[in-house]
Length: 311
Image 1 (cartoon, one colour):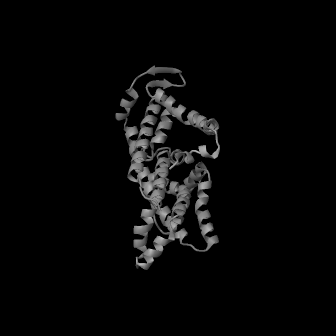
Image 2: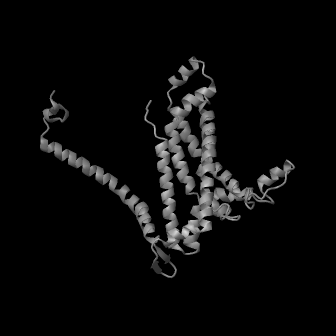
Image 3: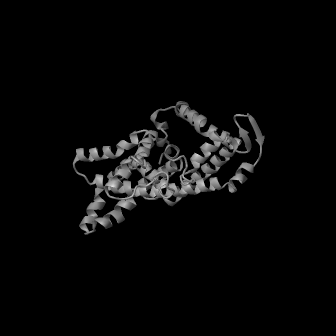
């Protein structure tokens, strides 16, 4: 076997011209990627590095003083009850919101995917995606009025059903779940579209074989749809978890972390320490810990959700 046929040397191409072609190809790749890498470095890695540096200082931007304190900011977190409470609230919010989001969006996506009328299917997909177009801050303001104790839509509906009104955003038992409701309404459109794309990519032959074998709808869903949807599920779960860890606007607008810090997520606590208390060093240390938490959770998701098959 002549290995030279694979390199093109027997096709009349000079070795020098081949090397020059590869060199020009690499230059084109570097030049194409340079703007993106430059922007990513300036707006992603540079702030992370700056935050890491600030985390070992006691820095107040108003006074301009920066006192090196080493690991004191990190040690301080262990005794900060508000930080520990916000960490717990963040995990509680992420776990509940992500689980409910994935269950609801998967059910809606399966229902929409079974619609055979093209225009009706497109209409349903558009209707569920519409809330994601609206700015999250505006959506949070609208939902705050709907949760109003005296004139809000939800308490009006409860009154029509002869039920007692609820302090949706002021009662510690309901405040976090009220924000979760708003977040789900504003966010499920993305995951529905992604799940529909994943469902459409599953070959029909698996379903046809299962129907010939007499499998029920539940067994088809459990043994075919869910396993073959695993890659889509992994992508959706990773992006949703990262997004919900960073949730901020709805908490800032609807509750500001109250009542009794029951809705104080870590992103909100970091923001208040940095810009309300001008405690940049401590806020940077919390942001560093927060970054590591998200990184570890993401790596665990990628490890547990890894698949080795293709179809």
